[in-house]
Image 1: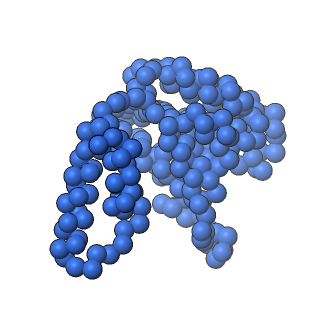
Image 2 (image 1 turned 60 degrees about the vertical axis):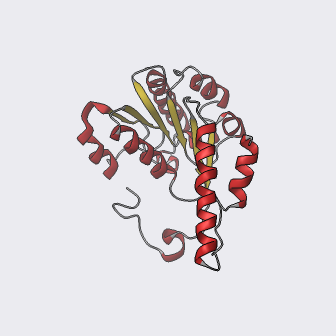
Image 3 (image 1 turned 135 degrees about the vertical axis):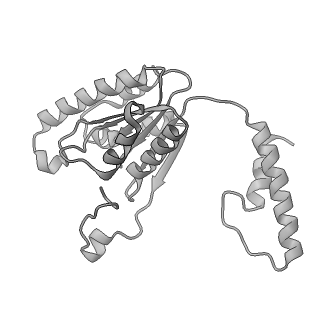
Length: 221
């Protein structure tokens, strides 16, 4: 069975999508046995390894959180990671404190000065983004670093602080097995096209907007 056929079978079995309840136990067992067989074949078909470009974008909350999940997973395997924040700065979030426990495994650079409406200085913001990008390039070219998280780089791209072609060319300089995660709303089409995985966070409810709930420790920072 071809890879496309396996993927089609997986879709028909509800893998990666919504599952409908089975009317009886026998039907459930039959479906799960088939799912197991198809998934085993799909895994065997996919045997390549490569460094991935992963983009987390959209209006919903969770983009940086998704990137940090990859960071935690990577350091859990004993690998080195680097985090470069393009907008955030001026305060130490809980994740920065927690990741200090991993010592030299994690390099953290918060090189922004906070929200752009607070800085109100476009030229300075552009200079900070350029500094952050040069820092990011050092890690992207370092074979010892398994994952580079470029937090809110999408925002810097959207605001025109850095050119998309510059970023994409820089990402292509990384070693073959180095992963890079890019977060922030407004990911440009060029980056989306170059990426291996793109997830768009959808805003459905948000307590700040709908309930007047302030940013809270452990949730926002």
